[in-house]
Amino acid sequence: MAANDEAAGWARLAAAAADEVVVGVVQDLHRAVSDTTYRWLGPPARPIQRCTDAVSGMVFRTIRAGLRGAGEVGALVAGRRTAGAASTGAPAPGPPSRVAAKASAIAHGVLNDQLHAVAPQLDRGVTIRLAERRGPIEAALLPALLPTVTSRPVVFVHGLVDTEQVWIPAGDRGVSLPAAVAAAGATPVLVRYGTGRTIERNGRELDGVLDELLTSWPVPVTSLTLVGHSMGGLVIRAACAAAADRGQGWLSRLADVVYLGTPHLGSWLEKVANVGSWSMRHASPHSAAIGRFLDARSQGIKDLRFGTTDETAWPVGRIDGLLTGRPRDIPWLEGPRHHLVIGRLHAHPSHPVNGVFGDALVRASSAAATGRWRRIDGDGRPSTTPIDASHTWLPRHPEVARLLNRLLTVA
Image 1 (tube, rainbow, N blue to C red):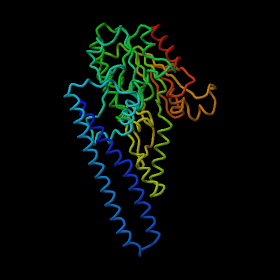
Image 2: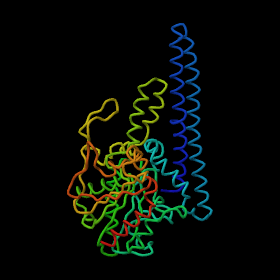
Image 3: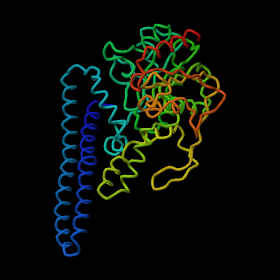
Image 4: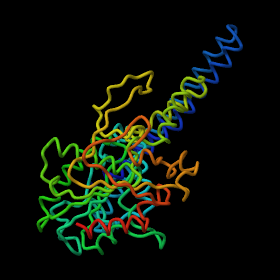
């Protein structure tokens, strides 16, 4: 993507988000309060309500039109500035800061539908990345850019609203899992993807990326290891299912899959958000606007409600937006070894905090794929490794590095 197209897209997306998220919610709340007030005043106040509604509607339309216009102006200015810098021979910008990359990942993960509507050029597919380089890298060029290439690639897949930088500690807290893999004699490979897209779609694209990666690998691959954090583990499962359907050759090289705090049976937080938004939409006209705002979250986030990796695996009904019944769970892929890393907030396994919150975002039953009403079966039975760590700490935890070292040593 051209840099000026990307800058213009972000300007349009910012204006659209302000329009829909800020002004849209305020307008809905204003209308709800107005309706309630004039309903209480009775029929004599109807003419006044029509006048005030007309005035307020005009004001809100003016504000929203101004925001959309500002977005177009900002897109034009940003595009020209970027193009002007390129025409003067200015050096290409370096890699974005961690803060900028994180902000971009949040926008992709939360505002995916708005992104497609106003700035489709920002849509982010599954791409190969290196922490020290800007932009995606072609699979065929990756071996030449890596310091060493071995016969054992290890692919890291990040989670929701994150990037490949999640695997690299910002300071001296934690360890770099890619560095630990390299020290064990393997070759780490990072990927980035837009987490607001459906998990199934990202899984299909990851399948294609892995096939291309192993096809272009300069030495024969003896074993492939996949490491997924949170949503990344679900994307890996979706990729494995897609590869099995297509008969992809890379599956025969897959030795181990490591899931770090993956919500195989769903995240309790997304379940709460789903019920909360439904309740607010039906509680009163005043809360309905906030409920509709919460419902605007991306489909990728909604997939975390039940850990959905296949959009067709839903023999269920709907009650005004709420799913009923239980989904069919794709069994563990036969062949590779599956390793489930389960985080917990308290060192004592039976502590109530662990039972309610798990690792803060994913409960142990979901991370272990063995719930009261659901469980993932199959011949590829997984091993479990509990770690005293929160959800966000797992991608840099020393115990995870030791686990990967053991797996690569055995391989």
